[in-house]
Each structure stands twice: as C-alpha cells, then as structure tokens.
Image (cartoon, rainbow, N blue to C red; front, side, top):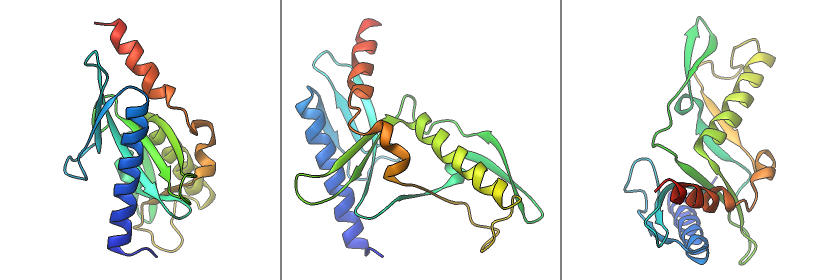
Length: 172
C-alpha cells in the first residue's frame, strides 16, 4: 500500500501532467493542490470560457471511492438499498483520471463527473445484487473502485473538455 507522501506525490504529478496537457490544448490551467473542495484545476481558454476539473491519479490498479458520494444508500437491517443519485459537487464538473506509469507513458481518461457517477452506481448496484444487498465482509462498507479497464472508452478523450469549450463559446 502506498504511503502518505507517495500518494501526495502521485496526486501532484497527476495534476501537473493534466495541467500541462490542457495548456498544450490552448487552456490556461491553474492547479490548486487540494485546496479547493470540489476541483483540482480551473482551466480557461483565451475567450474566457472556463472549466473545473477533478483529477484522480494512481500508480496502482484502481481508484478508490465511497459510493455515498454518488448515490444515497439506505440501510434495511444488514442490506444496503441504493436510492436517489447525488447532485454533482460542482456544476459541469469534468474528471481526468491519470495512471502514472514510466516517464512518458502515463495514461489519461477524460469524462464528466456524471459519467463517473453512472459507472460507480451501476457497478455498485450490480455488486449488491450479486450479494443480496449485503456486503459480505463488512456490512457498513460503502467501498467502490474504478479501474482503467472500466474507462477504456474515455482514454485520451480530451475533446470532452475541448468540445465543451467550443459549445460554451457558442452560447456567449
């Protein structure tokens, strides 16, 4: 398991790699190093259109989450009962997930927060269904994870953000 300093470095590497890629694509990107609750980067194009981006980085095999950040989950005895979807933490929030590999071979997955929510909620509900709604090891766990294999269709999809920029500019 990664240590605190190692995880902090991975987080910073992911944010800076993402900011650099955004700059290459015509954005000015400001990183906040965890000092803003719902996003890590605020990026703006030269016309003033802006996007907020949450960055998650791993050196391992999957990103870890608490499913309650995406869906209300009630308890009925030992069973977990998924309820209403949570509202996004920030309007039109984008996500960039980064796998940190050897120098120059990092991978980026780009999507909207609502896409992440669909992935997590779907897999969480599916997993609960297989176990009759009861978490076998710890009934009070709300752990969920996402692996790069779950995000293949989002790999290098920077147009999710750059297309949003163009769509926003049309509304000005």
